[in-house]
Amino acid sequence: MNVKRALISVYNKEGIVEFARKLSGWGVEIISTGNTAKLLEKNGIPVNRVSEVTGFPEILGGRVKTLHPKIFGGILAKFGDSKHMKDLSDNNIKPIDMVVVNLYPFELVAKETRNEEKLIENIDIGGVALLRAAAKNYRDVIVISDPEDYDKVLKSLEECGDVILHQRRILALKAFYRTMKYDAEIHSVLSELFASNNFEE
Image (cartoon, rainbow, N blue to C red; front, side, top):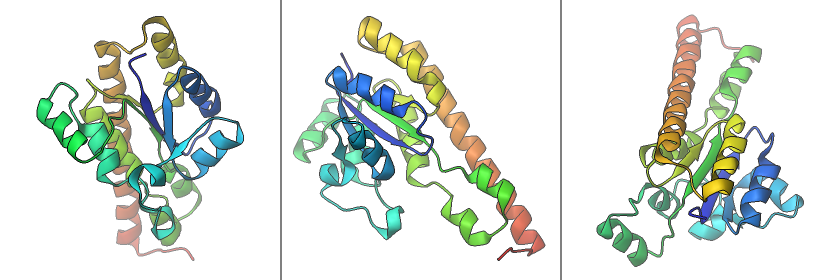
């Protein structure tokens, strides 16, 4: 099994317990945050909280959880680059081989309200950054942005202990497309809202 550590932080929790249980059964260390961590722990899946990995608590009501060098260094390091590996070693950072993230449902909230505060609070920051970082480093990190890909990834891991480069590229493109669409939706909704000055209470 070439996957040793997986970071899981999802809003849509459909299928995540089964997915994480399978990974954990193969000896994969699960790193997680907030409600995702609580759900996995409730279902008997061992979890290392992000705050335990970083040595820094979640702050600002959860606005800042994963934005830390011990997380992003582990995701962005090129495993074949000796300087990158030295930087990880010197700073006590372990590589992260898989990132499983889906985003706050900005689109759904935007369909229900034009309340500025609610819209702003449903703009995902850390999740988008995690997806982009993992997708950028797709040769070394498997990025999963869609629950529909859980079974395909598990099947590949079960058959050969890894995900082939072609499939990693497809997953990376899906993650980039997801973040692109997400940002475009935010821009569209907020542009309309700010131009109309029609703010709901």
